[in-house]
Structure formats: structure tokens, C-alpha cells
Amino acid sequence: MRLDVLTIFPEYLDPLRHALLGKAIEEGRLEVGVHDLRAWATDGHKSVDSAPAGGGPGMVMKPQVWGPALDDVASGAASAPALESALPHLDRARHDELAGVAERRYAGREEDTGLPLLLVPTPAGRPFTQEDARAWSREEHIVFACGRYEGIDQRVLADASRRYRVREVSIGDYVLIGGEVAVLVIAEAVVRLIPGVLGNRRSHEEDSFSDGLLEGPCYTKPRVWRDLEIPEVLLSGNHARVDRWRREQSLLRTLEVRPELLDGAELSEADLAFLAERGWPGA
Ligand code: 6GU
Image (cartoon, rainbow, N blue to C red; front, side, top):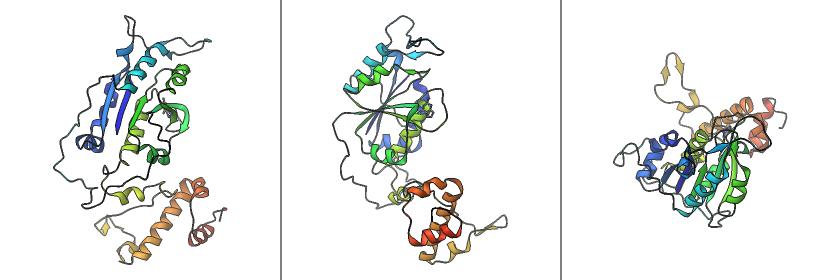
């Protein structure tokens, strides 16, 4: 996969070189180019924004800057140095790697038009979900356009849709100053699902949201820590009991903190009976 990011704060994207993403870069599963948008500014002040048409507060990012920038990045003409991984650790196994776990192969793409995907982070976008992360982990080329100020002139996106599949996405119901942090969030969610990056495929099959529920609590040794014990069932050696308990913890946590998720989850008869006992009105 190749990721390109257009931003007026390139150093803000430095965390992409660390940890899991840095390792994916080292292993050649991921290439990242971070481009300073000001390289496409044409005036002496390198300005990238101007006053909004129709008046009002704030500034809007200029189409004359974004247009050529997106043209160059789509065609591969933009030459940002590829990010290098922050830490060489090819020789060390990670805690989340399992020897002998086969790489995941994907059956095919939903909309393989050959056009790169342009993601535009904005609080006015569609909510980014785990399902998007799964779909986008199969992309060959994703470009992120980071807006600052009030946003990017909308014609930039209309025009870009001739060379890209364009998606405006939000990472939550709150407002950030710019899209850079959203890019870090989306990139991490997507890259960890690229075949071979996480190593242990079970660990994303069991992720929160993968089955529409939140994950329950987890424990490790020692059995007793500061007077607090690991739930007895986890030490029972009875896998069926452990699985059922984990499922119930997952149902309970979801009922407590995100009850609306239960409406879309696949629930068995046993799940429904358990939830009915806890007063879930949908059961
Ligand atoms: Cl993706 N961008 C910005 N600027 N603010 C946000 C956001 C994105 N998602 C939530 N708030």
C-alpha cells in the first residue's frame, strides 16, 4: 500500500514512522509520502488560504493550490522523500506476532476502478468505521488531503473526483483544528489490517466492533494482585465456559456503554436470553 499525505504541517505526521507503521514501512508493506502543501503555493507569501466567498469568519483553502497538488500526487509526480521507519527492528519479533500464522488473502475489491482513494478528513464527513478500515486495507494507493481553517474550496473535491474516488470522513462528533490527527487515526486503523502487518490474525477477528460488540475485560498473571483476583472461570481450563463468559462480558459491556450497537449485532438465542435477564428491551 502507498499512503500520501498533503498537509501544511508535515512534521505533524511524523508518528507514522513509529511502532507498527514504521515496521510495515521497513518490511516493504507500506510506503508513505508526506508532502508540504506550500510547495504548490504560487505567490511570494506561499499563501494557501483566502477569505470565504459570501463573507463570514475564518479562511478557506485555495483551489489553485490544492488542484495541482492533487494532480501531482495522483500521478506520482510529487516527490516527497519516502518516510523512513523510526526504529530498525526487523530482526526482533513483536509480542503480537505468531509464528506460522498465514497472511490473510483478500478475495477481491468492492470497487476496483484503478483510481486512487482520496480521503478528506472533515467533521462534516461520513463517520469513519471499522468496516471502512477493513475495506481500505485492500487499497493500493490512498491520498489524504488535510484541510485547516474552515475547509477546502468544495470545487477541489468535485474536480478531484475525475482522478480519485473521493470520500469526506469524520472521526467523531467533535471539532479538531485540522485533519492531521484524523489521518494518524485512520492510517493506523487501516494499516494494522494490511495482510501480515499485525501478524496475529485472530487478534483482529476478536477486535471490538469486528462482530458488532465491544470487547470485554482481559487479565494476565499473577492470579491475585493487590487483593484482586482473576475471575475464576478464566483459570478453569474449560474452554467452552471461558468462551461463554467472554461473550457475556462483551454483551454486558456493550449494553452498559453502547447499547445502540446491540441493535446491529448478530445475537444467538443464548445471547438474547442473557440480555433479556439484564433488562435489554430489544430481547
Ligand atoms: Cl476528520 N477533521 C477535523 N478537522 N475535525 C474533525 C474530524 C476530522 N473528525 C472529527 N472532527
